[in-house]
Length: 460
Image (cartoon, rainbow, N blue to C red):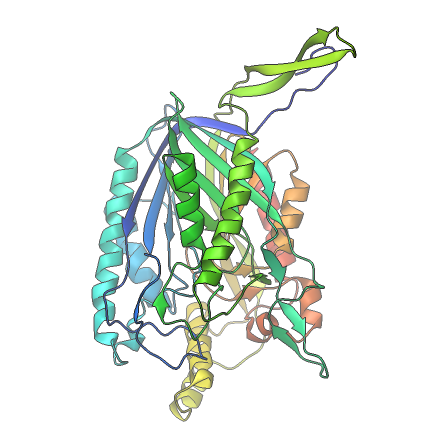
């Protein structure tokens, strides 16, 4: 819509019903909490910031069923049994179809594993207690988010945050690329911010979609931590003055914070505040819900002035959800039986932990030559949510957003599972950690990009 041939400044908005709820899932004191191969401790000494389960429910006006987006402050699921044991009971209890429920992880490396394979480790006897707490919290927030559904408007804007850096660092004096901040590398600085307000303007939620590994603190940190996500949420919520801040980790496969793998949790807090300030700047740039900034008239003054003001603009109401899959070619590697045999003779340490993770991934995917990876797409007006159970490189979200510049596209790693890394084709030409541990052959990210494009087009 134009006035006198001048395009207004519009924003992508969805009007429907939205509900949100949050519950604490911080593990019990004394539980096994080792997540880094470099750690010298098994049990955390305290809590830096609590861990949460947060559920966001969406429902189109007139629709009989909502969809649910559940975010957990966890690192990853070690095995299929680990993930299914938490997710499947929720699907059954609430009668959810495959495209109606997305469970994504913040990927904080300061959160302990929920897998019972560590039950015989120091503090491992408390893992089941932790799992029970997480499961109960998930049921609680889904039920509460559904009960809290109310007419609302979801408004999107793009911001910029430069916390994330490429993490494929050439080691001087060698041919190695190690996992760490590379100042010369490229990093996606796109920050997608969603504001959810009720019809009377009351804040309900702030959605933050940003691609950066929550690895501010590393193996020497002895505190349970939501990493930079904690300070991000706290700062945004205190400033906005209402509503819940929900973080969604984007396609961050090769991205790390400026301060990474440190001993002191202050690194996480500084990183979190940096993202929060960028979020707050983006929020301040928004027009009121249901409005656009449009040219009004010419005002005569010392100079001829262009006057703009807020004018009504109807949000989109279209809603659809879809579950598909993409066939990925496997990299030839050891079978589950071969990995188990190697594990049996490997002493405790980082090499054993690498093998345990490799076995868990192999058992999720199977020993076949290909794997049908699930892919999930939601449409909410002029915005799209895309989730995959894998760690995508940022090229995925950069290229997907370039294909649909008119849409606000949320990309979520580790959504409904966790398999492996999916690097870009160019990354397979280098010897970097994500490529060394990848399960899928070169070209998988590009195939996933094309499939996501096809699914989005089918919903438009």
